[in-house]
Amino acid sequence: MTLTNAQIYTLRRLNTGTRYLMQGNGKKGMEQRPDCLSTLGYFPVNAPSLPPLFRLGLIEFTLKSGLEQSCFYRVRLTGRGQELATTAVISVG
Image (cartoon, rainbow, N blue to C red; front, side, top):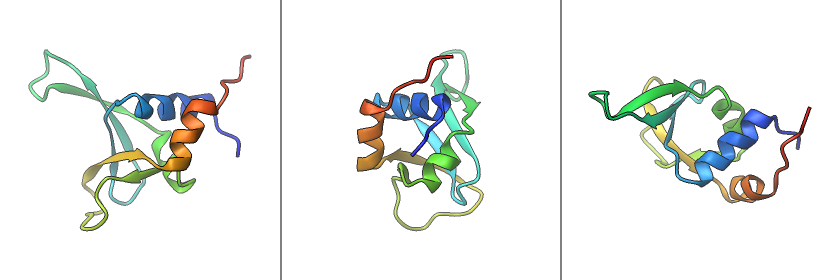
């Protein structure tokens, strides 16, 4: 399995506890970066690496049922995703 550097960084950030959300249909991802100046408490950042990681089975929704297609839900690493987060090597160049 070949992963891009961005996908490896996303796996590592998920492994360290960064909050990521993905639409129920698996087409869009978002990172919640902490922001003390925001009224939400976080700054939403686009995360285009999430849908491919979801299709590869490296991340999953924390909820198992009741997902609406257009709403965002938290995701977490699967066992295989945790393994790759610690062993995957970033390519240089």
